[in-house]
Length: 258
Image 1 (tube, rainbow, N blue to C red):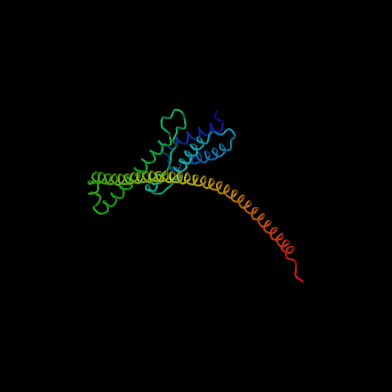
Image 2 (image 1 turned 90 degrees about the horizontal axis):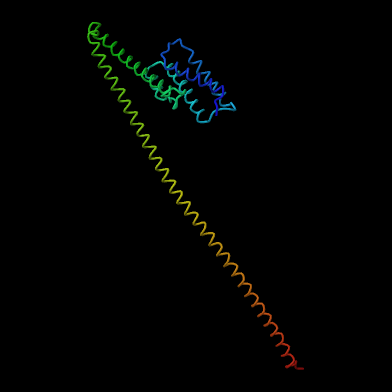
């Protein structure tokens, strides 16, 4: 299906925003924030457009716009640590915006943003260590020991970052194992439920069969009951008739004495 004019304009503006996000911007730069706000409005209009793209494409557009919006919000945070933490939760796009991109631009922006946050954290840590060193030992000793302190601080920061990276990998592995166990438990529960359903179906079929047999036997018993009642009735009639005739004969043969 051909792209509408609104979608073409949206893609152009999205590509421009991704390009601006990959560049270093000053504090006075305001255009990217306005462009992202315009992207949100265009995305809402694109969803309501009769010739809108597929749901998968709309989901990818929404993912990229949310990434740019979250990137701007992360840059407004006061400390590099908070910026780095916010960047960890950002989800870049999965597909290129334009055809000549080898890698999605939002992924490139995400990598650059994490690198900038890491550099800011390193600079902040080095600045804190160096200022404390200068206060206690004096400016001259600080200047002489500056390269060694920088190397030590950088090594300590790398160790801290590596430790956090290892913790994140361990957490991801634990979550993966948890998801795998949950999947196995779900499959086992499905098998148990399936077996129970089969057993219940067999029990219901057996109950229906027993009900049909019981119904047949009840009809036969009812017929036998009717037959026995009929024979008993005839027997009582014969007995009463025989008694009546016998009394009449007795009266005739033995008349009453005077």
